[in-house]
Length: 391
Image (tube, rainbow, N blue to C red):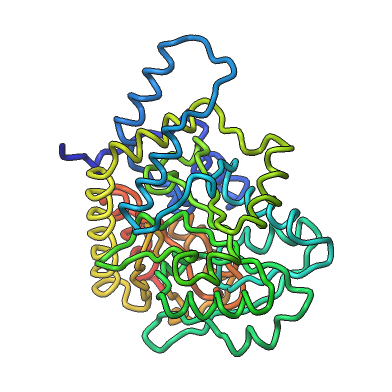
């Protein structure tokens, strides 16, 4: 089956975050939204049909979690990443950011330190801080080619006995990096030696692009397996963020017992009715849809690159190795933060994520969501070009 990613889906009236909070967050509602990380593509029909079939049985009482959920997740991870996950390692969690917050509370105390690697997904900072933890910054270093590396020398300097957790973005958001085995192995050795728990957010793992490969953190060494919790979900890949279908993987039995006992005691490990249904449908029937979606995203990225090269030469999109989010270097415009935001929001009428929200190293960048029909992407670029040429 050939899927139509050019289809425009009218999301008005659906309560979608992408449109409904524009006034609140950007100060105006007349914006083309290319910010929050869900796609404008219609949710795959096999997921909708699976949910509709269950809706035909009009009694929605307590349900058990089907064993098929776990066997399906295990098979998907093995087929796509070569990782043989054991059933006892797995549990449901009610969202990855929530899972990070839960792990922060279980494995650290108030005043303990949590390490993050900016520029990075902003809840990595907000969640620990909101739970009374001190955030320690281990900024990525930027290469001349526009890519990023981890700074292990600086990590050695800032990590002390109060650092209990490091939150890893793998693949990295917003820069779209598929971290190499060597980098992950070196990070695992450092954290294992310093008794630091790694929380690896791997929600974008099934969207590696342009021949790149995602490497699950826990697979790179025995040390990595023993000092980590991995979080995953089908939600980004299959555009079902509103159906919370996240899971945790913990190979270390001591960590697992401590974390999963706490989750079970608070009934956080019990998925709602529709989560297993959507996940099973996505992972059992979704491979062809996923492949076509990835190709479309790659074409959108090439389209963006070509357009910027020809019409917006001061904007430098950094080609992502994974995901539908593109990190754009806008520093050549010579604008400060407020001026850059004003250019995109008040002049071009676009809603993107400004780089400053991702922390140190994000100033002068914008994050663009290209998970949208190409006609929408073209409209956005034309709106930007119209104000760009007036500068």
